[in-house]
Length: 296
Image (cartoon, rainbow, N blue to C red; front, side, top):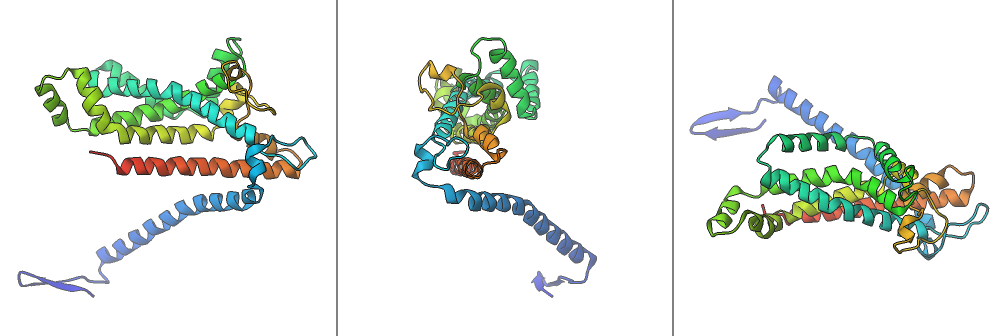
């Protein structure tokens, strides 16, 4: 029983009072919820680490996947392909996403267009990833514009990245105090100069956070790439022509190798899953570091 004195009053915490009992119960429930939330994450990381760590070697990062029945090989083409497709998606999504957020935060004045864009962004963020794949398939593949390719896969992933980038950038710009904008305008800066030279640098950590989170989501998507990038057992052709050809990615490789009845391919699937988890973990850490450096 704890007690304290405030201005001559003896305040005692009654351990058996209903309020104290209720508080202890709610604290225990909250702690239990935290444990239940963390257990699946730890279990996934532990299981993937145990299953995939045995295949971590230099061959994994330097060789092509083996044909069925053989044991030697790696995931080099899928690793490069993932970087290529996610890179294309980032090049597409970041400029459009950041510019859209700048319009919403700095120039729209919360008009009907801005409200419509925000509503559409919220809806798009909840759309299943396979819908983005079907959209890119209908737009680029089945129409014959470019066919199955890294570019088509990048477009599909860019659609998934846009809502995250727009929302996080919009929020990052809103955090910058209005006084900063008024101060810049007060010394004669134009509105666009204020945004480019004052607001954007101040909001940059938040923007980087949104971009890294969007990349983390895009890197692990499989369904959109099945409809767009397809798969290839060969080395990616890192050129303009190569970007218009089917390309291997880690997510699709994990899917393909996990369902075949060959132990060597199954082990490579676990190794690919470990690389994907590590990539997501790394981008999440970078996002946290960027947030810590936020100015406002």
